[in-house]
Image (cartoon, rainbow, N blue to C red; front, side):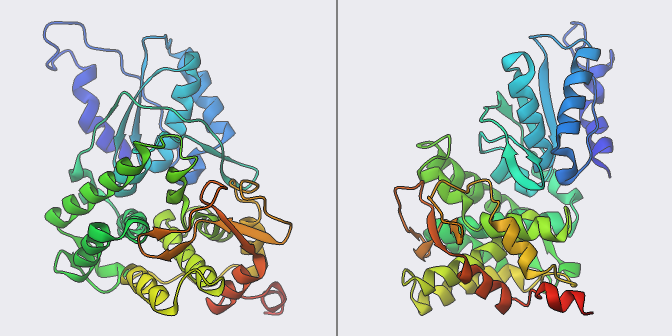
Length: 355
C-alpha cells in the first residue's frame, strides 16, 4: 500500500478513543503528507511544514514523527531541529535504506539550487522505531537502493561486512538475476540490516558529526549525487548511484597508485554482484552535465580542490581507506572522472545534440 495507508494502519489507534490509552486522553495527532523522494527536500516543503505546525497549534511539547523513506527522514529531522530551536523527534523508517543508513546518522537536509543535501543540520532523534516488515511493501528499486549502501559498507570496512554482503547476494536469500525478479527473504534481510546498523554505529560512535572517520561514509557520493541529478530525481535510486560512484573511485585509486589492479578487481566484483541486476538506464545524460554537477558537490572545498579537481573518499583495498588530513577526502584530477564517465558510455554533449 501507500505510505499514507501504512501511516493510517500504524497510528490510527493513537487518534482514537477506542485505542489503548490507559484511560488518559488520546494524543492529538496531525498529519502532513510530503512528496516522495527528493521532491520533499525543498525550501517549499520545509516552509510549508513550519506554517502547518503553527496552524495546527504545535508547542514545545510537540513530538515530530518522521514516517517514510530516507528523504522524509531528512526533511523531518531538519524541521524538528528548527521548530522551537529543537523539538522531540522520532523516526519510523519504512525503507531499507532509511532503516540502516539514514536514521543512523545525525544528518538532516534539503536540496537547494540543483545540489544535493547542501542545506541542513545535525540533530538526534529521541527514538528510532524499525519494523523490517515494511520492507515487504517496497518496490524493487527501493530494495536495491538499500542494498547499494550496504555494498558501500562492505568495501569500506571489509571483513564480516564484505563476507555478509557476498553471502547474501550470492545465496538463495536473494532471488533473481534481474531487477524484475528480485526478492529477499526475511532472514537475509534481517542479517543485512543488522550489518548495516552496526557498520554505521561502530564509526559514528566516535565521530557523530561525520567530520573525520565518519566522512568515509561519503564514499562514492560525489559521483552518485551528480549521476542522480543528471538523470533527474527518482530515476537512479540513491544507493545504486552510490555503487556506480564507487566504481569511479576505484578507477581513480588505481590510476593514482593507491589500489592495485587485483584489489580493484576484487572491489569491483563485489559492486557488480548488485549492479549486474540494475544497469544504468538509457538514454544516459551527457558526460559534461555529470561532470559539472560533480564539481558542485556539497563537500567541495574540504580537500582544497583546484578548479579542475574533484574529491572523494578513496581506498587502497577493501577495508583500507586512504587517510588524509582533509576529512579523509582525497582530491584528484577531474580528467580521471571524465575517463571513467567515458568508459561507462556517458555521451558527449556534441554527440547528444547531433542525434
